[in-house]
Image (cartoon, helix red, strand yellow):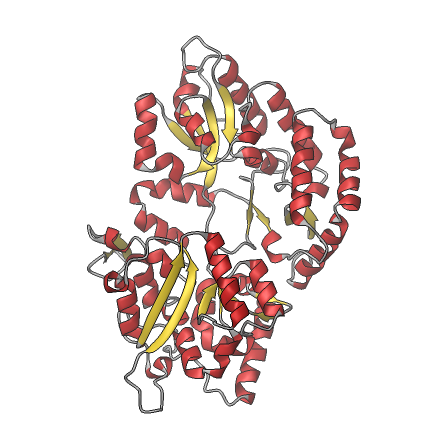
Length: 515
């Protein structure tokens, strides 16, 4: 990873020398500016045409909601003041509306100065020559690169060049939750192995843990196949279709020999009746509703939907004695992993139009903005929490929300380069701090799918649908595991999956994965 970035940086520095660029983003030597201060002179990049005091207009578009009007937009006012800009942010509540608007503007040449793009849009627009190749400018974005990390730089690359600024990575939220009061009633312990998990799920189904004398409970629920994430993890297997490193090589989970063993155990759990009978039909938060209603004894779910105040109240309303406990992933023959986590996925990314290279002054302001909101001692705190000593204070080195913090609940819309997720969440959700840390600390299989783009001619939607359908047949015993190899053969021949595999392996190898 470091080699890739060093190579890019060398190219960018050389490009800067050849072009006679001044270099640097105007940060201090350690890359810091003080909270609320205007960036240094070089970073401000005042125009030399006699209009040095005139703010430079920047237009940014993205999908989102709840942005206040400019006169009430606290973050805009602070950014304008700090960077001598007039920032016009437009958000579209519907992602479909955003995509339509962006496509119209890109095709008509009416480019925003910074705009959100999906991975596929990044590829499409870069190949059409519409995006700025940021590679020669990397030295001007050093503060941003330090903030988002070298892996995130890769997520904005197409054909070896950087065309997008990807947000800093998020952290995993999901874990297994279990009814401790049910365990106590049945005199059981929190399961620590995959076999114990299977036994507890069956006990929750057959031994009337709620004491109502009715067979109306089951052991496990969750959002479709993701309910079994820790089960796959106990066999050292990623979710079907995941790529990850194992024994020094990159493997696809479908080709991992342990996949058949994981599917066999899942099939046994389903056959025992201990799994939500509507598991694969669950949508939205139906699995959460079943847990809250007291139908399930275990649920695989994210911490906000079990610990936020309104959900805690719902749980207690149904049964004041209900006690949900966050539990560690069970161990198994392949180790102990709470499913997989795609380290290649980006929570978002932004691109700059190629046309902006004709306006170096405005381009520099875009760089200034990205660097400023990526500076932990500068604008980063502003776009996370608002204005210091108004919306938050610093207590023992950590941000602490004031009673006015709710006034900037929309600040995430300005987090164009992301945020330090753990610190941010623990500051925003102090009552859930332990649950946040617990979920983040669980070991995960590091999936690499976000780093691999689909090759031409491969329809991922068709392949994914076929995989989902056949995996469902295996775990519901509608198709014997003995036919697994035949399933793989059909996938390769009818869905062009072999071409996808070869392309992914090649891309991941180029990034240094798998030796």
